[in-house]
Length: 543
Ligand code: G16
Image (tube, rainbow, N blue to C red; front, side):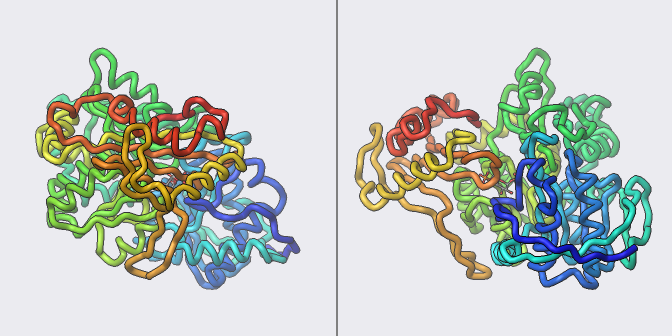
């Protein structure tokens, strides 16, 4: 086996977005594209010599080939060991856990998350650090700088490593350890949650449908729900991961998880429904006929987390991304614990979790998690809900009803305009930005603006400063609209419009969100001139 140094030159567009580098698969497959980015990561973290890494992905198209390249490059760059999930499979939360428990220097996670997979779909790669969390802004910037000046990369000339057999092999001087992707993760879940209570719940006839969406969570959910917890066979739907996610869009929301929504709103619906995404870090929670928004799920978990053994001592604090609704804020206030508001992206929670300032985090984009790892965790959220249901004895609908009666309801919706012409999307944001200074006191669609700004964040732990994280307009009575451009799309620009209104009148807690939010929706349209500027008269996705 020989290590080769290959000459290369910088490739445009290797700038990470909200969560690592996401591109169309064919872009990742162009000569040197993957290699350049992997070498930039290795250089950006100060080299690989003597370091140990975790590598795994969600099994999407090109996962297997990309892993072999990463292994050969890690070996040529002097890494001492790489731990890989069997057949290259690791969910994002499982990878985060492995980095932490095996005390490696970091890890490579291959996924484009909820984006579709296949040669004509999307691929992605992100680097996580030794705390198990996504690279911080500083490291992300260092990696990007490498991509703009790279002249060579190192790669071993070797056969593919057999990743189907558990155990250790050598690749040059580097040890490759192939492990069971599920075992350590399942053990950790057993330590955090009351598995006895959940087992008893299933034994009593409680029925659940879990949609793995043909993605990576299938084996994890099957082992834990049907194996360890005794849920009936067939509880897990679409549980075999496939490279193109069965041709679907593995995004757990009512639009893309419509099969599950059909089951949960149909005749003889099960008691509980849940889904997770391509790489297993997002989740959707739905009761019989009762969809729970991710923001509400975070608030309910904050209110009841003490029912789970891992959180028996209560929460030290909570954190949410800025566009996430303020539902959790009121729970934190009632409990007398701090609530942090961060920019979108799980990477911003890492310092808070490491410092013990918060041990529960969540985002409107279907992400919830805690300090057990440094990623959001889909199955964790599902097990937390099962634990809450099992120990409280209440259904999802009853839990939501009593939550809203106690804390009020944050009606919430997100409208996405996808693959919009990039110049038009930036023009829309510039148009909003230009109005900010003069909006206060203005009446828009019957609402009065109380404040308008562009969100910026100073990290209370490492003092790093991040600007331009979304434009927010607040109205009297606690209503709000936020405008952001997504950092995870791969075509044109995606405009996200986040709409929210607080209702505390007990007689008005059961409205349809789109009705409750009609004035905020009209205000968003008027402020941003969405239709005129994008040519779209309706959002592509409403969640
Ligand atoms: C990623 C990030 C999340 C973020 C989401 C949406 O999730 O990890 O923190 O909320 O993207 O980001 P954006 O609004 O910029 O598209 P995932 O599940 O895609 O890795």
